[in-house]
Amino acid sequence: MLYQLGQTRLLRRDNEEGNVSLPTKERLAQVLHAEGLFDMERAAREGRFDDYESESATPISDLIRALEAAGKRDLAKRARNGEWDGTREEGESWLKGRNPRLQSG
Image (cartoon, rainbow, N blue to C red; front, top):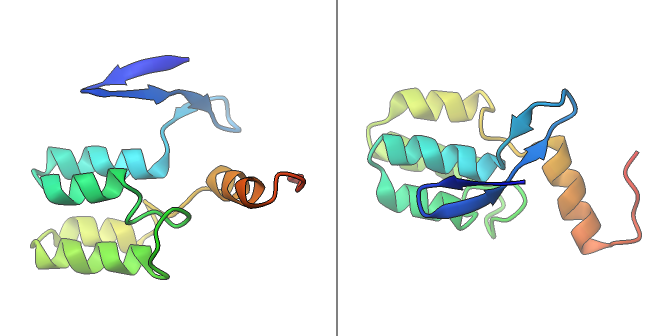
């Protein structure tokens, strides 16, 4: 299932509870966009702050530092509290991408 978000088409997916969820990096990008942090939004969409896509060993710490530098301490606190940590499903997908023979469970 697809839906439109601005200029981005996203694949809908259901989580374990049957609710539709967005990828973590997209949820973060939406918040950053709403706050007017467009460069950080772009970085989020590119995976810079993503636990599994980032080249950094500390993407959430990088996010927290960037938010604090931008004066967004409330968002930094949300990041510290794990709001934009990668999900279990994202981790399993990342792991399968590295070795398609692996099974979850």
